[in-house]
Amino acid sequence: MQKVQGQPQRNEMYVWYVDANDTDQRIWQTLNGGASWTHISDSGITNCGDVFGGCGTAQGNYNLTLAAVPDGSATDLYAGAVNLYECRMNVIFPTCNGAATNTFINLTHVYGCSDIARVHPDQHAIDFLVANGTALMYFANDGGVYRALEAYSGLLTGTCGFSNQVDSLNATLGPMTQFVSISESASDPNLIFGATQDNGAPATAFSESSGAWANVNGGDDGFAAINPMNENEWFLATPPDSFSGVNLF
Image 1 (tube, rainbow, N blue to C red):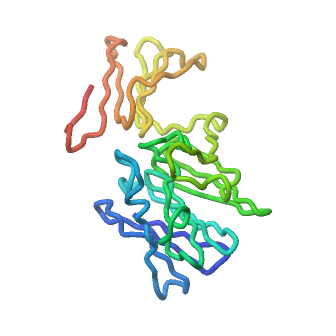
Image 2: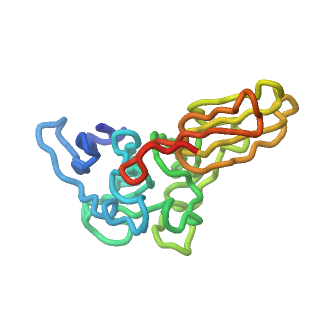
């Protein structure tokens, strides 16, 4: 998968891609319409500080995105994979080869210290509006839509214990969950059990009265079924992997 992003106020274009095995093929920049390309250092993405599963381009064929945001004479380059990253490029550090915010920092630490931003993993899209000296940004991922009202001053840290100013819009936007499958009781229309991409296996016994849903399993889930002869017996299949093989619960 590859992602191409232009910087709207300058003659800049960025490309990020992975190979068939999700191996990072790096981020590249052109300032002359593609005649030549320069490698942008993404060492801060490869070594992002998360202990389990968040660094690099894992699932890069599924979640990969870029946004180049004008910031005065600099360009703030946002890269989304499992985590969301930012690098501020300027004339002194034009290839994210500096320190502090002049290299890619991990804004979300989804599998580390997720309290830094409380943003769901697996980034898919970024959009922004720069006006009156502020940068309004939106981030879309497996968990829904998130917003930063002032990215220039509110998205500055990759250090656990500090926080970035990101708002979740999912409480007011309505349901944003991607269901893979859903099953209903043969005798009780209120009882529904489903499986979702990356957001567990939700169930409710109050579907006709807008009652609450509860997750009965976490993570990636595939197919859900309620036994038509016994509504208390539920089945759930989760994606196979190299460690556990086929998973049926």
